[in-house]
Image (tube, rainbow, N blue to C red; front, side, top):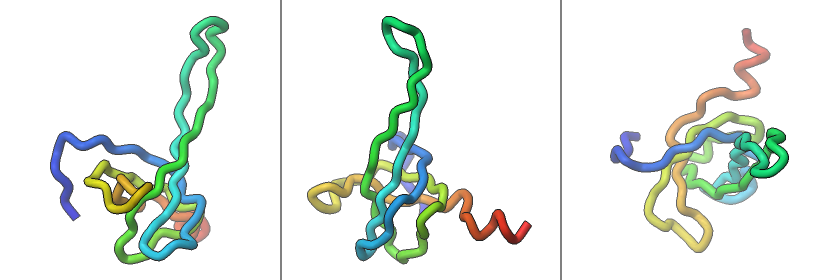
Length: 90
């Protein structure tokens, strides 16, 4: 699936695939506290469209911005980067 350029993309971990053609992806990012300068880990959940229902819990995926697909869905799964099953095969 080719996406238009200029769209935001993020890498995150699938935490839920219980919905039909939808997965919940958690994206973690690191940032510094403005006053104390300590590194803070923050995370946000995004609902992404998975047309073939191929994503499983634990998969690391790249999601790309898209048009609104439903009330909460604004992202599409572009590719599965790493799957937990691949770790055990190596």
